[in-house]
Length: 205
Image: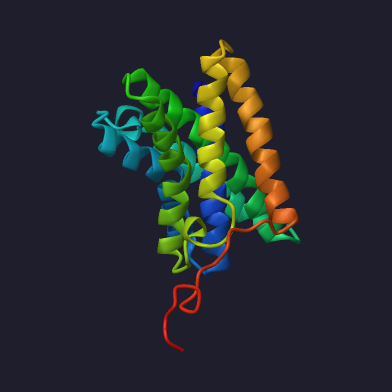
């Protein structure tokens, strides 16, 4: 699980840095956004669950890892032709990995399965929400894209697999593969939720 966590924070730190580059931030801004993206979801989850100390306070090396990952992404992005594709890929990976980690943290606190799934989704999406807000962009989770719903589905699948007797390790691999694939397919084929407008809600024109 520690390896999965390192994978998740590196992926999300890179996604934050790439987003910051698209918004014209300097190196400090890139590292800040990358760190907040990587550690923000877990921080929100732990505060809500009363799970202390926070992971990055207990292990300050996580902060340095995210800063390094953001710096590497910033340094390498100038040689990449398609930032958007890279951003979506690493963000999808981080989304599912953090969802699994959040489920494990909540399950260790003996909360109900519904809260376990919700905690996983919060861990998966809140870092990205903070990233988008810092970059002055509408958070993906609030748009028509399949994002939070995929996190919820991944969390539910993870809880269900363990309830069926599958160990955490194999269940994690299955959820990572399935969740990542669904997220990338949703992006590729533009699977979306319906966007409500004033006309849909009966508002006057």
